[in-house]
Length: 174
Image 1: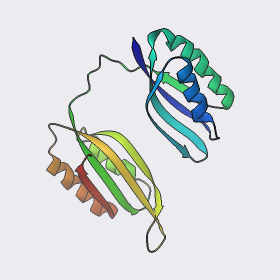
Image 2: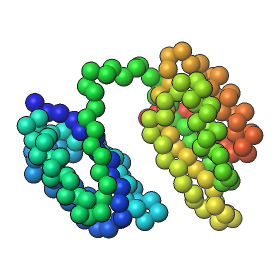
Image 3: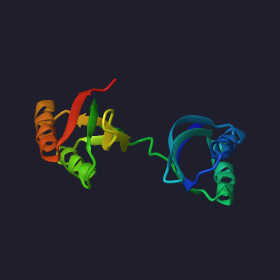
């Protein structure tokens, strides 16, 4: 029987980290299912889900401890297979505007107050096309509960966009 593990990793970035982790998964008969990884501030940060045969999970945990030799901090979690995820309607959110402290917090407050789940979030800075000045961007995949009216959420985000002086778009997830 296969079981899923969710791993989070953090440590100094250098070539070969993904290869080393993928080798550990393969050695235990596992399958790399999904992941998100990035270099942030010189650090390698990642989260991934692997499926492993039940019989090899303990051996994988022991082998994965060797990643500490490479300076990686590793956390392994087993998702609760019995925990049913609520039915959520997917939407995409995108934001672009001048950077300032608090943008993510204010957007998150609007979403959390309506029980909207942030399922995936990417943020960063990019150069404006003409001026070259730094603009803050955010892209998110959201899960909207059935009791939340999309129009009301859209109006709340548009109000916030005016206050923050940013462009916010809410659309269908693709």
